Amino acid sequence: MSGLLLQGIINGLIMGVIYGLIGAGLNIVFGVLRVVNFAHGEFVILGAYFAWFLLQALGIQPFLAMPLTFAVFFGVSYLLYFVLIPPLAKADDPEISSLLLMFGVSISMGALMLLVFDADARSLSFEMEPVFLTFGPVVVPTVRLVALAAALMIVAGLAYFLYRTHTGKALRAIIMNRDAVRIVGIKVEQLSAIAFGLGIGLAGVTGILTALVFPSFSPFVGADYTLIGFVVIVLGGLGHPIGAMLGAILFAVTEQVASIYFNPSIATICGFVLMVATIFVRPTGLLGRQALR
Image (cartoon, rainbow, N blue to C red; front, side):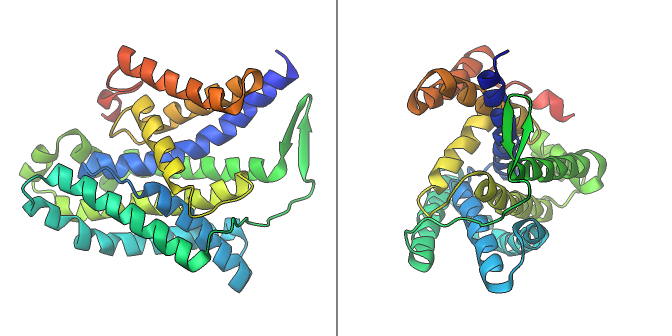
């Protein structure tokens, strides 16, 4: 295996885990609420801006800002759920209404971030020594490896929550059969608010990781992350949070390896071709709903 190809695979794995967190947050909200959150990418960027503010105003380093970011985003979005989501049930067509609502939230958040932070790209200045680590022919920025470690810890925590706690098991039960969960007396409304808070909280924390891995961020790139989230959940399986991780890694590795041999535009197209091929072969995604059990 050539050093250049190995470099592409390693870069794809790092980016794939972070993409997977984007997809996992989006998938939790969709799986439990059946709401397509078009504003998910904007929440990712808002998380990056929140970490940037904490660094500039209070001197809190990005990795230390992650627990605070999750707590703030979870708390605010938990309350926001009761303002935005329950009224949709009274609409003539709840699904279309939810699409329009979240699309409006996406546009509003982008406009507000543009107003508050202006259009200039920002970055999280976080330096580590040594700046790069070398593994044979592969050279990786140290901050990317630390971001990967943080992302893997978040993934492990999310998996433990969903598969080992009563609340997590209840959320998976709602994803599989919402009506059956209501029959046995589980409070779906409260759990839905928790799912909304968890999905947005993950988006905020992932925003910090993306700001560390990529050189800059701005109010204009939120839609890009939303699109990536949709791609990885289609690959992994709609409504399957952990499946999003597998889909994200496949997408990112395909994109990074293709970029070695083609220009970046063609490399991105290769990722979308993988998604389309997956839909034809397995319409329910690579894992499907059976993996939730």
